Amino acid sequence: MAYHEYFPEVYIALNKEVLNHPTLMERLAKHPEAEFEIKLAEVAAYCLIAVDGEFFPKDLEKLAELCLTKLQKLKGVRPLDQAPRIQVPASNEDWSNLLPPDSTKQ
Image 1 (cartoon, rainbow, N blue to C red):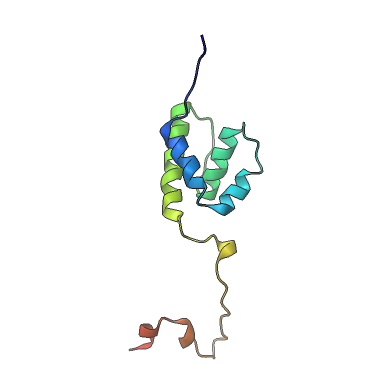
Image 2: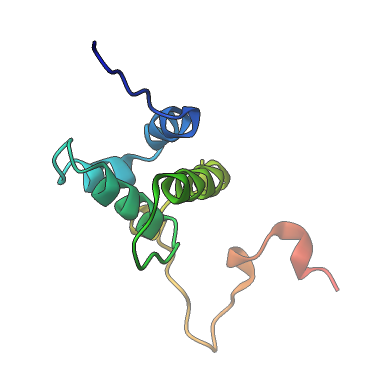
């Protein structure tokens, strides 16, 4: 008799969400496909979630759910390495061009 094990829905949703994060996809590409737990740890690190210890399958599902929620919040936010750069003027120069137009009014 064949035994099939299906991935929990949260793993499928997390896999779909990862596609919206190119920097994370680059990090995950460095790991073999079979190393699911390592990839999940990489996603957690990207989400700034610290993991340490041994996890049971239900714990991994909870971690995946936490990562999914965090990634959904990060969607559209650029990582620091892709953030636009601005040149900050010296302290004696005019900063008004860096501020939103209405914030210069007093």
